[in-house]
Image: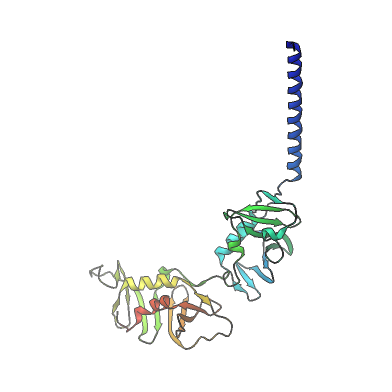
Amino acid sequence: MNRAARSRNTYILLGIIIAGLSLYIALRQQDRLQYSIPSFETLSVGEIDRLEISQGESVITIERSGGSWRIQPETYRADPATIGEILSFITGLKLSDLVSVTGNYARYELDEQSRIRITAYGAGKVLRRFDLGKGSPSLNQTFIRVDGDDRVFQTQGNPRTIFGLSREELRDPMVLSFDPEEITEINVQGPDWNGSLVRSTARSSRDPNAPGIKGDLTWTDANGDVWPADAIDALLDTLSNLDAFRYLEPGESLGSAIFTITLVGDRPYTLEVFSRQENLYPARSSESEHAFALYFAVTENIMNPFTGGNP
């Protein structure tokens, strides 16, 4: 074969390769258009006023009421931190890879019994709805199907850890909260000591490191006895961010009251403790609408400064 023939064949071969590449690229682009990943319209947290989370026969409804979220129909206060995570995921929802177009949902735990369906409402209409399936083996991705689309995609992370919480786990555990700096008086009624402690500032020449004195701050009772400041500070720190171990069921017995402490600040804050039941103490608080139980160690740390009545 002469040089001219070889050159002609080379050009023909190059033309075939170029044509093949062009066809491949065109088909890829068509495929990407056919299997494009959905994006969502911008949705703000403030637009959402009701959430519905269902799995199997379980349906949990949470509604915004004033400045808080309430679990219905009991109107239990929902945990603000958890609700924040839920709303952040819903409003920032993004899909990553397309996984399946076959409709075999059971494989991904997106079938009716296994899925977690989340619906966000605003002003009486559905703003966003999607189903969560199982997580990937690495738990870095979760299978997901969005409303109106039969395909299965993946989304980042493992959102089932928050959307799969029970009604009890979604409740706000905080039962008493205040700023310790605002408290000026402590009133106690207990089995060993009844009385009041008053906060005052001492501007005498007494040793500031003496028990009961923290800088210029002292706690004294009606007899003028000074109580250890470190113990009172620890007590206020515990009470100012007090979480329930669990809430009591309606009709569950409280037992007999054994200890009541009232803290006076911008307003009074009261904790009433009832007789111990196994490892828990039933209790009520002025900051909680429902009775609850405290773990025994936490409760006894609260009562210990007043055991025996001696500073």
